[in-house]
Length: 401
Image (cartoon, rainbow, N blue to C red; front, side, top):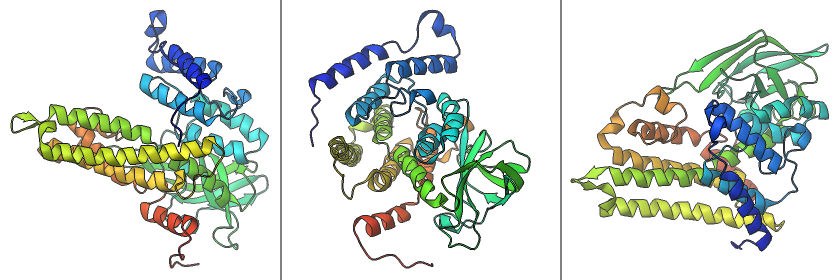
């Protein structure tokens, strides 16, 4: 594992840091609405080759040569500057790279540019009431009638469906095929007649998830990604990108810094809690796990930069599983520091995204969200099966056909 950067890479980092000194905006630009400021700075980052580096210019990216080292530096420096880079939601972070791999040129041209710009919002239609971890059991159906798909069914735990313009989802198009072979990956307009979205209120007080009902919903026949009946293969690519987002170690570093701050301002016996030996021991243990994740990521990064395979420890497997476990350790420690305040429900604002914002209620929300994340993107028990069977070669778990 080589953690040293070459001279040309260091020069690239210096140029990037100089660029990032332009955030926050100043002068008349600082008077713009915050979202407009973010969009303006993001566009400048694209022009300089820092944002959406792997996306073609014709789709709104900066079309830079593949370079894992520079990609990592961009991520680190944007994070340190708290500057707006590329959007990382379900559309930009999951659908756009999937379309680059499986989409037609027409689909890429139509959907990727507005998605990267934030003008087209997406939700993911995967889980159903009877198809969660066993996703291939899904029953929502799409029948090709003339030049349109006619969709009927029911999706659940659909994140931000109430805000989305489009859905990318899995639907059964070949009812007589085996369950994995009979699924197609379709794109649906969420404003189409026959779609009903019902919010699901969470214990955090927010309603980010929804259930979605489809009654004779129609979508153009060419809104299929990949071949008919091969949506399962396409969905693997999307889930890979989702797990990479969930297992991001940078998010853990931010949360750990917030935990240290909480320990400094929380009192125990009239003194800062961080001076308590038991608290310090617990923080040290969590930091040990965090460093383990960081160096595992560095080993994977080094292997990828050399063009080598990282082995068993792959982003879609170990990093996602380890990251969700670490998130629970971290937020549980925070809630113990909060003490009796943990019994108070967070406000909707504190619970809206599950991120610690410096308030006790937000920490409570983060802990609740950490439990949910162990299910999102593939439940932890499913991740362990994947690691055991596909990476370690262990006998397959007993399951139905």
